[in-house]
Image (tube, rainbow, N blue to C red; front, side):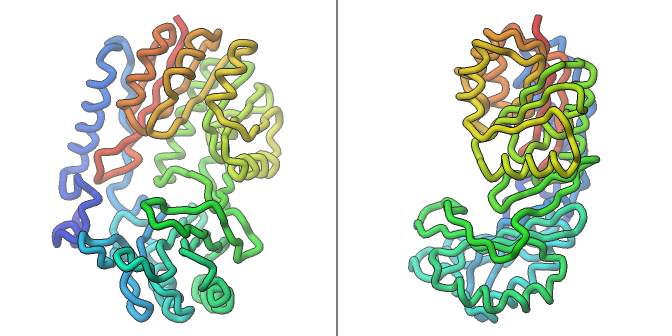
Length: 376
């Protein structure tokens, strides 16, 4: 993939830009295999590859510049705005929407936040595109100062972007490197974006996490379903379930499936998706996944557990709880193979049988790994 921003030195976020794509995938698999070299008998499945460009379904754009000439992209070292609205890894529908968002910022007179001066209002524009073409747009503001003007001009933005299904304001008043705040102000009647993935339509709330590469996420859920069907469990726990991607894809009506996630918003989205799909024997609980599992595994163990933790991994306490349990099968989906390898060391009775690298993030060194673990 060729990127003019990278060549000009304006953006180096994609550290592997310009490298042959086959080599990128090969290097990622080599890196993962070396981290899991303690398991020589694991069967490595062919890596799941992606298109090289136009794969990101979400844009996290720092807003810089001025009201009359806002930039959407990143900040340079001197804190000035660098416009990246033609970024080649973004889905075409996102790139096509950004000019209208820029014009809206000017029309509504929402001053970009000046990091150095700690002055202004608009910090980020977060734009997500569904596989069906719908858009969810969020404005991250320092305060409520511009809320009324954004509401006033929103109908003009909706006419310019008829695909805009969900729009909201997030308030992040603190001057620190945290994108989102706790308070969300809904601007549209719709509060969630429909995201079809395979044969399941997930619902993404404003603050819900979802993989940035929809096509690879679909392969990820399909792999989990294949492993689950082969294991034929009667009961499944999906820990760190988010909006229910794994749980909903593994629910077949016969097995009992439970998803656990700390975000109440994500759990409500998962429940809505389950109702929409008329799925039976699937339920969701809003609580800390690790605490729940550590507490419950001493009393009851499902046949199969899916874990999809953040980059830090599941941690020693949960890994040891799984090790002591009678869980027969674990499907571990990891975005950090370093923490994955550490967690596996704490579960010696759960042996990796199959593993697969999924290139969720082309042009970068990041990747997803799925591992099928079975009890000795």
